[in-house]
Length: 118
Image 1: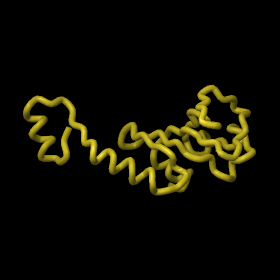
Image 2: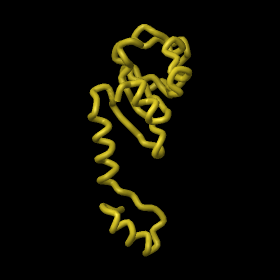
Image 3: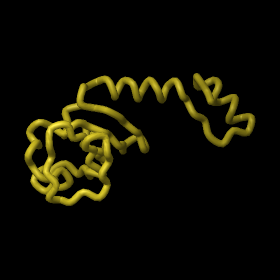
């Protein structure tokens, strides 16, 4: 656990295999989480990929997963649909989005930001 690069160098020289920066990671998460009201959670997988929990865009309400077609249009995968607090990982492509739904999406961070105007 390091707060600054100086700490990380010291730890690496003294046998640490990996360094974590909890304060930096929390600051990054907070910045992304609060940049928009429709972002509910965020997990960075690497420098280019992430998982976001996002409120379903208004224009998708009433459409099915197939009609939204985010995989083809934006190279983003919908991993789950959360409805009434319950996560559904085995949703059908014919599932329609309703008001209050959130989705877990996985993909290139830039594609997600572009698609959801983050």
